[in-house]
Length: 634
Image (cartoon, rainbow, N blue to C red):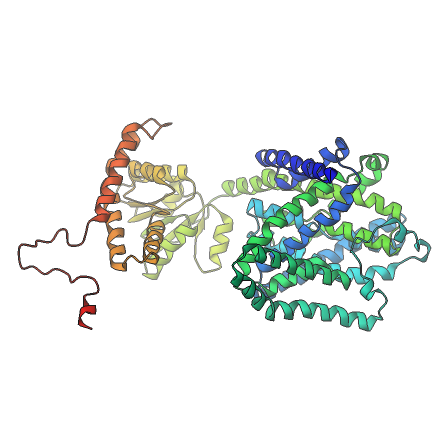
């Protein structure tokens, strides 16, 4: 028992030290876990052969991750992804497998072994890629969505691969693999001796159990557990569900990850979805981290050193072949520019299912043990290099396209309008739609080609160019415009634009969007006629809704919102002046803070002011009836 405690402490200690440092250096948590594994494994020897056993257990984190991914989807969304799921994902797996197979044949391996290696290495790392997408906020990009489609197809493709690999078995390897490798899949004795037709029925029946049971039985079960009021029982039920499905899938020889993914999709519209996510998420995070540590710790440096040439050639060849396939498919499916590079760089590695399939191929006498021993570190090294490719994407690819957009010449503007809108992002779009709906002609400028392309799909005409450039404003007709709406994301450029227009075109009214109070004060000081904070009115509305939920009368809520807004507007000029009397590096002077507190008192006083406080009670003037006065007549 003491030994388990010490090992657990070593793993957790390595993660606690390495991951925050890696995050601080901008390397991402996945690389931090991998480095932690290398340090406690091959470098210092603090952990040993038990790493492989722990890795099998930690792969359950991948299963949980697919369950959570399934919860985010529903069948309609999957149907909408069918083109990329089948087309992009199917072509990636097929072409990568065939090209890697061709390379292996050229190296002298047999066709069956080469095909098995091709299938094993065609799969990418769902765990690393999705985790990194979440951390970097790339999941909603075009490249991120395309990569997710490919990963989803790969996870599904594991099923036919598991069925097909035994057909490639070589009789001369019989008896070697089974003795050399433990059963990575757990056990599939339940179906291994069944005839083909019966095996197919068992597989279909198992999938039907997951779908039908998840749809009809899970809700009554979770409702029953929820009625007990015991939070830990809900967590236990969620774990029971995931582990039970994994066990069922393993028994019939299917991928546990696919089974839990299907269960997640079935439960995507369940009222218990968010509770399930909350309960499963901590286990997924810890197990995935443990999995990455074991990948780093399992790298056999002696084996790598003795086969360095072969291993590094294999790593280089795999990433080049998969990268070329992904790049060409990105062009074919019109995933362009930085999104295409994101798809290419994020999926160029082998994945965790590679370990699973490698063990399965050896167990079924398809790939010789010595070849599998070389391929294992190859898979691990490609996974180790993936976070570095994401850094390449951030530092080189993304910056290149941003610089290219900045240097791109502005378009010739052949339309004029009384209103010029600088920036057609989430803020400028609302302003433009409101004006256009009132048949007011607008000229929309934006410096992001991606944004212009996106809004053009909903018939919003906009021109590319840096709206802070005087020549572009001239081309857009600033001399004849009545109004300029500043809604660009760059605070500095927004200020420059306001100063320029106020100096050279003082007849133009300027309405500006501010990011925060300081930016709003700067825009006001620069000459903007009306400044609106992008969060001010939404926060005011939400605060009002909060009061209504707390049973404050809607009329009183509107009265308090109006009082709040009035105090803010009346004090704006005063506090703006105080803000600019401070030093540039210290705006929060004592006099500013004193004034801010004084305005807070005015605000509280205005909000608490009763509707009847201003009425003259000495006369016969009309006063509103008391609340619920009609109740007295019932």
